Amino acid sequence: MNPPAESELERIDRQRTQPSARGQSMVRELRYLLLPWAISILLPLPMLLFVHSPMGRSRALNVFFVGCLILVAASFRRDIRPPSIATVSVGLAAARRAWRERMLPLVVALFVAFAVFTIACVLFNNPNNFGTPQGMEDQGIWWRAFVFEAPRDFAAPLLALMTIVAAISIVPYFVLATRKPFAAIVFTAALVGSMKFLGAIVVVLIYGWDADEQGRLGMPWNDPDLLVWLFWGFSAVLCLSCYLLGKRRFLREVTTPFNAMLPAAAPAQDGQSLLET
Image (tube, rainbow, N blue to C red; front, side, top):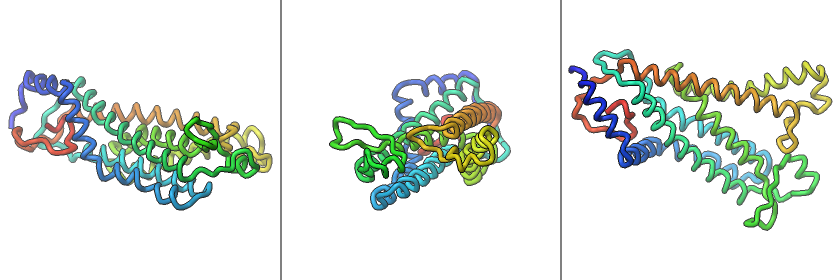
């Protein structure tokens, strides 16, 4: 099958930029992500609803992170393609638009999952030990809002916000680089965890081998120490680097020939990429 003329590609791309087309693309992407989206929302709820303790919030945060990784990996797994046989390529402008159309629904889905996590956390798993020694030991980040009778601990929601940034920044690159979504999830989780290890190395080099005995390795979120700031700094560099690498790889792959063996008249399926229609 001969590739369509350039003018036809431009016409299709121009139609994709219309507001109605963008709305349809958003709905199609969210429908495609429905199952992993539901997993990311529901996975932490049992811990938040039934384990009312710092351990419950910590485990809920961990499984929420895993759910976000699954959601992002599910979105980019469709870009894992074998070497092309019959091919057609698109321009760089269309590829950049495809990247935006891929990322925007992910941001919406992750933000909704984050909102559900936050509501469940502050309404059903608040420790209610503000101003007590136990509250200080739990490293709560308290906020007294007019809608709450008692201050609420927002430590877990703030950390959850950081996890969605890590998920959407790092996972796309490893999915495209390894072509294995499960490996991308494992590598992302391991790299984020290793940022604490790198920070601990710096702290030990500064304060000596007894840094743990000095209380330098506790990572108190409510009173950040050097290790906390190093962890966030290293994580920010990791997220930015992987985001740029992932975007670059995505643009490079979709601006080079890719599999186009389906007939041109075949209707687009739910979740189908912009570049697959």
